[in-house]
Length: 412
Image (tube, rainbow, N blue to C red; front, side):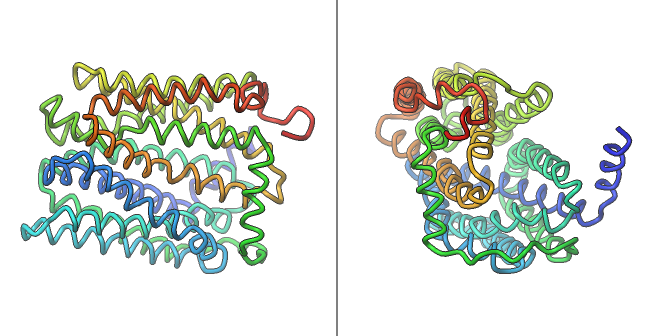
């Protein structure tokens, strides 16, 4: 107990780690505020669900198109510099939007172009930022440092949408100016962090090593099933892009309500993370994951049928809580079913699929709403998610029958 307390105190007094926490929190808040503002203003300008979906699509394109380059950059160059350059680029993009709103020149095309720029910056920022922590803190406190960093980012994700709604109500220009300050300050702080130690030289990234991770996933049904089940749930059931329509046209409310609705799933995610920290899942992990995805689909259906804003917030709370449970199980299965020497490549491939499903899900939701209407599109998405769960119990039977996170016989 004494050594544990000592580790905590040392970490809290570790200047570089505290500065890293600021970078994580500031960047997370800026991203959430920017997403709320762009979605709200896009619908205000166009009243088009399809245009809302396009916001997700243009942010998906750099994530998938630059996948090889971003991973290579994170492994080959100073990660502080990569994060700094990416966050300055993101700050410049929202500065353009701040100037456009202040001068009355904001257009849907400019919103899409700058969303693409933010997506490009984020594609380079995330691999370098997420892998920088082992360079910053001693190995003895790394697990605790990762837990603290993750919790801080999750709190920022809860607070960001609410702050975005408040700032939109005050001034759209102020929204983007705030994002620019947060990203720029985060980049400057990141650039000045002193590295505790350097990691050992890594093997150069090439196509053969990259695609060996893809081959591994294809050969291990538990890992493949966990990735695809999570991917299709978010792809089909994600209704985040349509929340401006619910707030403006269905509940007849304003930006503050929009920020609260956007924060509801993050609040559910935070509560679930805390519960799983106290009472971790030990048995029947496959059944629980399928149940979590089914609850995710049910929450989406409840959103479609919501008669009031508080009911919709409850539905989105359920969506965020169940999605987090699914993600925790998926990441644990990936970690424990993958040999140590393969984890980097397998996680890179897994992130390529699951990390971009939100943006593609936004586009799918917008296109479906344009074709069928908002409520039918969300209802169809939730029903399709549940249908995928039912079908996957047969397709990925190994995953469904998994009792523990560890493979029973050393293989998946």
